[in-house]
Length: 520
Image 1 (cartoon, rainbow, N blue to C red):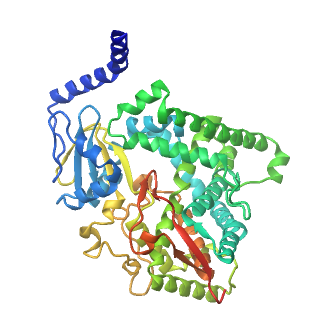
Image 2: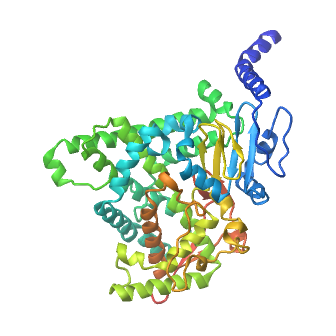
Image 3: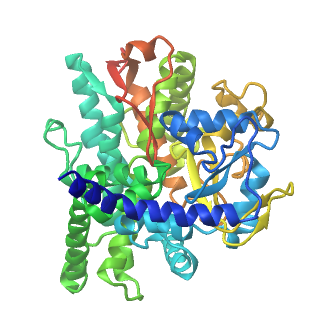
């Protein structure tokens, strides 16, 4: 019996042992340079694996400490048989990677392979010609006036019909509200409407406890589980679990199946709708899916599904994450909240609108201080804190540092927001004024220094949409309410813990109490 158990164990362990042996031999015989990092010890045979394991629970803070402490503003790492690469906060590196030598830094087979079963080959999980045609099509759609108007209309309707009534009821009942969770439901409703004209009704007033969409839950679970693949320092482990169909990979498989089934139902319904002329006239839609269906290009259902899922992954939590950190910052800075409210009032006066009326696109553009306050919040707490590419062929960074083919190359927006060499000695202070010129007009920074919306050819197409949504929410909320954070440790000045997923989410949410202003 003991021998049977021994042989069974050896059969299970043999594949990972052979895998590690092969790659370890390859590493030991590889004479190419390995990246080094100030303050990070490399171990024989193990490389930087112990450091990654010990700091996996505080990955952002750890990598930021190393980047801030490095004269080159970057850290290098190598884990034998698994990963080699750099994580940088150096603007010169970022510009080189994202623009000057863009063709040499694709997403790469490694990253695409991790996301392929979830996102297929949509815009955010493709390279080369496949990426280029999607990018051109999406760029054309996002530049259209009709889509911009559709986005504004969707956001304003969600605000007026669901979000603001929910806050009014919470204020009247003196309820504690998890503002981050409410913002996530708001964001999911709006991105689903913009992406494929579907309203999941996650934020229906009066039904918030029962309104959670099964699609939203499945999508969120799939997103979090797939990110776990990237954060696991022992890369082969997720592949083994997937092969055995156990643990997180079993759950991920089920979540992906649910997401794909739901999305395909919508794609096929839109196909049928577009094939019926009378239906097209009666139910004209401006969402992204409708535009791709109506284009002259012939796309399979699977391609359309992947396109839609890429937009959802980009818009599901990004604005919710940004706004949660923003309202937390505002809770201890009443002077900033007061100045935003004054600016909103001045815009009301200049546009001839009354409290409670929707803000148009042009009115939102006049809110320069609000734009600066949001941007400064994202500098310190970027919704997408890190992003990775792959090096296709051996390269040299602007300062002469070697980068090997196959290395991962990551830039950290989180670390860059904390570099005095970029923002000055007050880089850790929240100061919206750093974004305004002497006339109080918003002054943008180079996207290679402020990388929140990425840069170069992969610059975020939804940047304008994100600001429309965020400014609409903040302007309406601060016009009518005061938001008080009630989490004891946070309200006392502590920084909320975060969950590192695709976005920088607050651990445990953001519990707040809503008070209506006397004049409201």
